[in-house]
Each structure stands twice: as C-alpha cells, then as structure tokens.
Image (cartoon, rainbow, N blue to C red; front, side):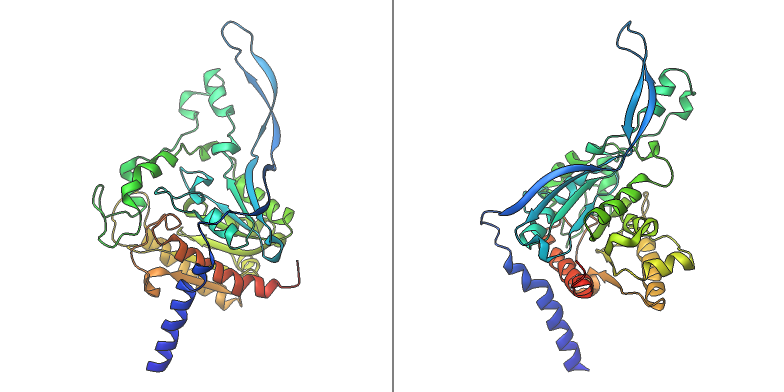
Length: 351
C-alpha cells in the first residue's frame, strides 16, 4: 500500500511539474495563422426610431451570431483544437493575459501546440446582442416591465462568488488568485445580456457548429458556460471530441442524453474552498456534488469521465477563476495532460 501511494504521488507530481517546463515564455511566439470570424446568426426585421425628428426606419439586423478569434500554431494540426468559452459577466478576455500580466491559457495552449478558439457568448461583447426588447419598450409596443434585464456583477459579489475570500476585502490565507491585481479583473467584467436570448441558448448551437467546422474540437466552458459543452453535444455531438467543464452546476440528464454524453470523454475541474463562502448567488459545494453525481452516471453508462478536484490532488487555494490564478500554468498542464490521454489517444488517426 505504501509503495502504491508513493507511485501515485510521484505520477501526480510529474503531471503537474514536468511538462510545464516545455513552455518557453521569453521566446518569440511563432504561429501559422490567426484571425477571427462569426458562427451562425439569423436575420430579424426591426423598426427603430430615427435620430432626432427623422422618421422611424425598418430594416434587417443580424442576431444570435457568435464571435470567435483564433490562433493556430505551426504544429497545430498534430493536436485537437480547443474552444474556450467564458462565464457570466465576462468575455473571452478571461483566457487572455492574466490580471497580473502573466501568460493566459490562450497563449499557453498555443505554445503547447494547440490551436485555440476563443468565443464570446451570444449576447456578449463582440458577439453583440438583440436590441429588439429595448426598442419595443421605447416605442411603447411592450410595457416597461417587459424590458429585458441586464445582469452586472458588482466587485463585492465577484469577490465571494469567485472565492477570493470568505467575505469582501478578506482573502483566504492560501488563495492563489493574484489579489493585488483584482482591479484588472473588475475591468474585464461587463453587462450580461442573456435575458435577451431565446431558449435554448443559441451559444450551444454555435459551439456545436464550430466543433463541426473544425472537424473535431475539445469544448471548454467555465462557470455560466461550464455546462455549455454538454448542451452543445446534445444538439450535435458529431464534432465534439472532448468536454471540459470548469466550476459550474451540472444539471440532471435523461437516460437518452446520458447515452450521448457517455460517448464523449469529459473532464470536470473544481478549485478550493468550495464550502467556505456562504450566501450569494452561487453554491459551489452543491455544484461540485451535482457534477460528481454526473461523473458517476457517465462511468456507469460506460463513459470516460474524470473529476479533477484540485485540493484532493494536493493543489490548494485555487479560486473560481483558476485560469487566472498564480498557478494557472500548473492547472493548464493538468488539462493538457488529460486531453492527451483521454481525447487525442482515443481519436488518433481519425483527424
């Protein structure tokens, strides 16, 4: 027993600290291609008041499109592309340079020869939003109480929801988030206009379409979008090679849905102090429990499902924003290692 335990600890240590040394941070970043595009979208007729005394104008606008920016490294074709989607009140900036100026997961994965596609959720940032609900209220077509809501998280709410500490202004002693740069995170937080969206969320459809367009991709979601990879796979699993869900509540699935998801390797990642913050809109311990239930269900259905609970692996202090934490490179290596073992080995020869 002691010998097995020692081997397990050694393997975890290798997975965490070994490959990270391969990333040379102070060398030029060489890529094959970079760019941006939109996925999906549909036309909608809208009548808008003209400026000043000008008459109202009727025309078509495009809504529900998803903006994507990408970087493809020179050796990108050797690996499955990774699509990263942000959470509530944020944009794809989540995955770029960290608040304290370190390399974000976008660049880190590219330096590890992974093509990375960053998406802004439909209704957010460069994807834009459908203004019809606001225009209709302004024109008197609908009453003011029917105007779509706008969610904008405050600094105080973010502090506890993101688990920087048990209460605003107080940090956990072992906290990994670079709290000295928290103001830079606050600048990343933007209004959430998901209330303007139809149901189901068009982002799910666009993520599935993007995976198909890429001829296979790993879909990664965080927080609000943490379960989006599963939702995308339930719409069209054909392009979804792997699912990575970071810190979110897992919803119940039907037996038919479970059978679909069990065919796709799935990774669930949670940080530390899940039950150490009370109140607020998030219950991370409950979310963790719900995802553990889903992991068990996927395994019983013959699926390849992994729960990566960082404290259980000896990695302490990670916040909800673990891709921005001080040890974000370490977590990135664990995720890349999982992709190599559970997705690329399985799909080798199919691309």
